Length: 289
Image (cartoon, rainbow, N blue to C red; front, side):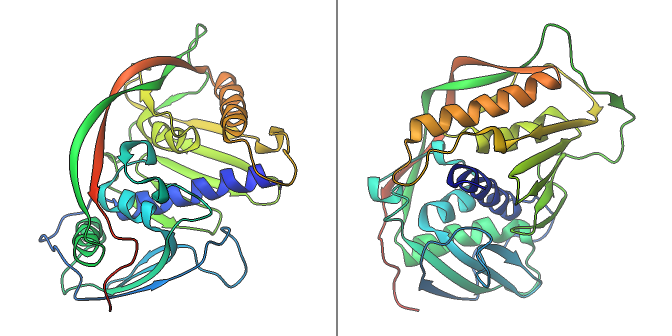
């Protein structure tokens, strides 16, 4: 797998981390971890032997491995990178502040409450303050092609709403979220997205095509058997040295558009309003454990 493919797969893995923290399940609201230890770490590529990169939640503990500070904010507030306005240093991949976190959950807490606890942690230890806003932005509209969708409709199963059901292991080849399942072949870089509704497909496409968000304009209602095979081996290697982000983004779009065409869907560029969070204050270094 070339460097471009590794970055694309890595982006998917981090997107699944953010989704895993935002699963919606019932339970009494908890607003803070009992104890949290934060340690600086170093940037690593997903799949590095012996290195945990991601987020694990057990009944007693949350473990976060080598997650950039910007990604922690996205997980906490359930947003994508394009929805965060903050300091330039938060975005630099080489200079990103990366951390390991081990936090104890209070009795009775559920995975759905982890984002709210992360918000408290970021406010207490990194002095994060934000305000909510919105902005006009370039977006992609996912629409049905002229010959209609090329995937079958199926009988509705158990109702799936947003992030209400989750079965995921980050860094182990894929995961499942809401109405979509992702699997990947690390050797070829091929990614398969299986979705039961356009909404599940949209969440994953947005991560692949960031910073441009994807909006559902298909008008499709009901449950489907959607299988989107994205062959990242079609992306041309840019070789060693700095990667031209604009060229990389265009190549990612090209392979996604080609994959969508095979299932009767396409992307259209348009203007739209997106909700954002504006970072008013944030410290690079957390207060002592």
